[in-house]
Length: 93
Image (tube, rainbow, N blue to C red; front, top):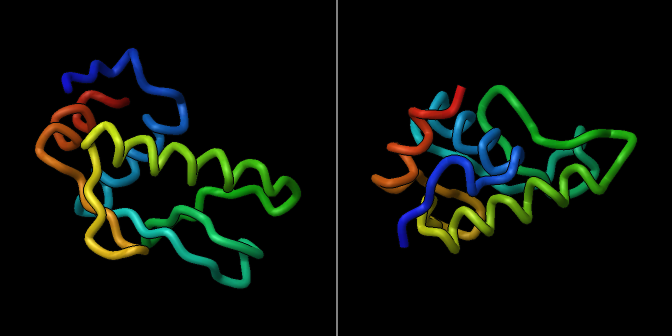
């Protein structure tokens, strides 16, 4: 499956850029600051404390990146960019 940057949603692009800046890693887990599961890097959680739907949109984007084989699941909570994910991630501004 060949994916172009233009085919990705804003959330998917955000996650590729964040993973690129975090050694290719994203995590999905809950902490007190997100009041439920959220996609995270060491420095950022993708959520809005006033709108739970935002975290859900990023979780959906994370799973879609896995389906497109731009991310692979290392564990239930840890995700790593694939080679193609790195290629696209370098193109995201």
